[in-house]
Length: 91
Image 1 (cartoon, rainbow, N blue to C red):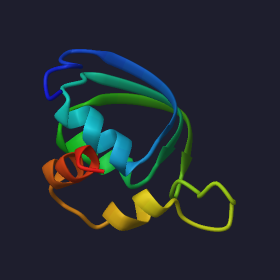
Image 2 (image 1 turned 135 degrees about the horizontal axis):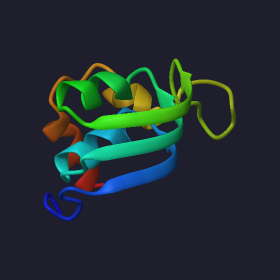
Image 3 (image 1 turned 180 degrees about the vertical axis):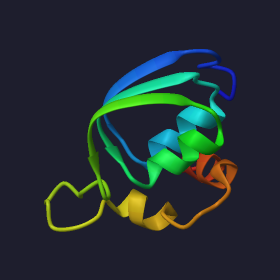
Image 4 (image 1 turned 45 degrees about the horizontal axis):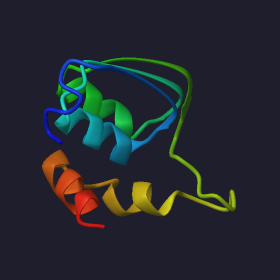
């Protein structure tokens, strides 16, 4: 899967750190998001992924709208996007 999106341009409603990490490792070159989290932006910038968004939020919220998305919370401090990628593949 690491080359599945090689050079792709991806559009999605929501991009958090986990999605940004997976797409980065998978080789995308550009991302458009309706909503992007502040945790996703450094991942994209450090890996020279061009991105655009309509709205930036502090973090992605959970489905109940009571706090942070569990996946965003779990990986918010992880520095190695390959760890995020590998752990997500093993879910």
